[in-house]
Structure formats: C-alpha cells, structure tokens
Image (cartoon, rainbow, N blue to C red):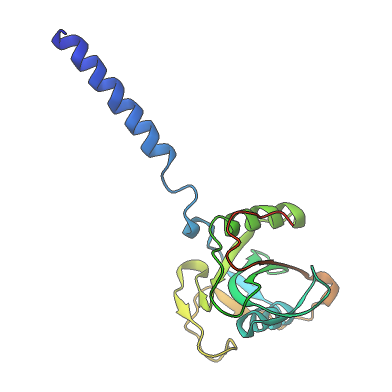
Length: 177
C-alpha cells in the first residue's frame, strides 16, 4: 500500500472515532437535567418535597398514601409542577438507571412544562448546589441554598400539579406501567 492510501485510511478512522466520541458525549449526563434558574417553592411544593424526604407521601398515580425510598425530586422552573421519583422499597434495592431520564421526559410532556432535577435522594442539586438535607425536613432558616427561595404568596392547591413514579426493586429495564 502506498503512503497516501495509508494516510487516507488513518484519517477515515480518526474521523469515525471523532464522530463516535462527539455523539456519545454528555447529552445524557444527569447533571444536564439539574435546574439552573432561580426557583420559588410555594407551600404545597415545599410540603411535597418534605414528604419526599420522609419517604411517605400521597401518590397521585396510585391514589393512596405510600412509603417509598426517595430517588429524585424534579420540578418545573416556575415551581408549580413537581415529579417525585421513588423506589417501591424502603431499602436501596432499585436501580433507577435510564428510568430517571425517561421519567423526566415523560412527565415534561405530560405536564407541558419542562421538568428539572431539584434533588437526588436528600441532596439538593438545583442551580449548582450540593446541599445535603439533614433529617427529613428542609429547614428554611438555613440560607445555604443559592437561587432557591420560599414563596409565601397565597397559591391555591389547584394551581399546583403533582406527579409521582415508583419503580420496583431490581426493575431497571421496564419503564412502562
């Protein structure tokens, strides 16, 4: 083989490798779905988040109270719509895998509002925060959480929308209900 043909083959493989690396980079990294704007939490969403931290909440999907292990709490940037994502076991038996991404996309479409990750387990990740909530309740006296505020305005419960999705232990492939 001539030197020119070898160079063309090498260039072809470099281009293919570059395209592969670019197409696999970052699009599905969970941090791309963390909320980045300012967020005003109203009373209803704050109560919902505290219920999420406790692992005991009213499931709007199941229409009953449940006790599940918290995995992710997502909310719209206007603070009026939230998604609680949990494991249907109180131990750490679930593998959320790609289900988190699918749930964000699914409920963003259902609610007609883009959902962003507010917290993973008990760690608030909104707007660059890495704030670990101690205990089972978010204490607003601690001002360590940047760009997140409590909104004391009167809002109606009916103005808020609540979604939840629970996965079963070891259920890492089947997202459909």
